[in-house]
Image 1 (tube, rainbow, N blue to C red):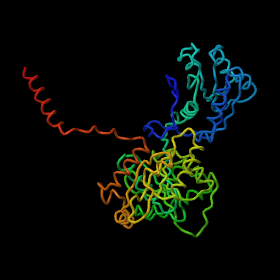
Image 2: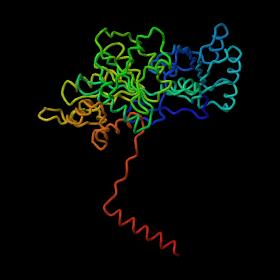
Image 3: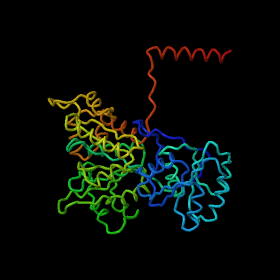
Image 4: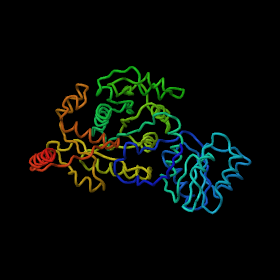
Length: 430
């Protein structure tokens, strides 16, 4: 993809909700080679190679700029992507002309330029440059430049993955995940899929009142890589825009998986589904850690007690370190105000975690129990229930579709409106 304007760096580490369009899709399995002029850019590009969105890319970084790239590709084939840095001292156009003579067809080129460059952007485009970034660059600039080459050119949907996990067993993470997915599909009108990853004890089929014969087990134990047609057959339709990839919830086998067991499933669904909600089991293994780290957004569900507080802090600490270029995981506090239960108040919980929860869901055993037994969502039982509104707020926050706050009207607003109306009518008579 070619952009006529340079990138600006983002502050992805804050907790602000991203816009609906501020999304960087991960790259497929590609090879990337970068040739830098400065040590600073060398370190930045290396750091970009550690980003989760470039996890499948094989990235190497060398010094020497365009001249080193020309020497290297005179004797070897070119990779899928070449990243070149120009320090503004040499003639970048002459270097690109020489590179074109040794570059394989289909190779995509990203140039990290300098404020000293005086080369018209159209001249770079004519020489096959796919993207141009003005240095000094940040990690996300490099990640976005490489990823956008593929997400924009392939004309496919690149779905956003939201992983929901409980800080402790029994905190209602699955209930939150299922209601969240239902809200995203119905209220935000996004085609969505819920994947129940608790294969032994998953409850998604019960909560959605479904009894599918096939589900996630048929995909993960498939000997061949699952394709779009297979995934469509395995999905159970819960509503017009919501589908379910159910867990077998059977104990006739042991569900031990390798680290990359679910990668192909997620990649396939990303191609056709705008939003994928993962109902994560409460366990810590190679595949659950990889799934959380590679998700676009993470929601931790916790109850207001000491064990949940400790586990929430631990999860956030590990995931922040593993995802330095993403916003931190979000968390919500569930079942707040349970009768006669000693609780850590929300302010103290937030102070200990060092960030505020995205929501605090009040305890309502009758409403949630009835919904679970009926196979319904909370909004289906009571659209005006406080929990339904909270799920809408969480959904908008996670998807970046936050509605602007309405301005408060004072008690005198009706009188002021009438006076303004009279003034307009008087002006019209004149």
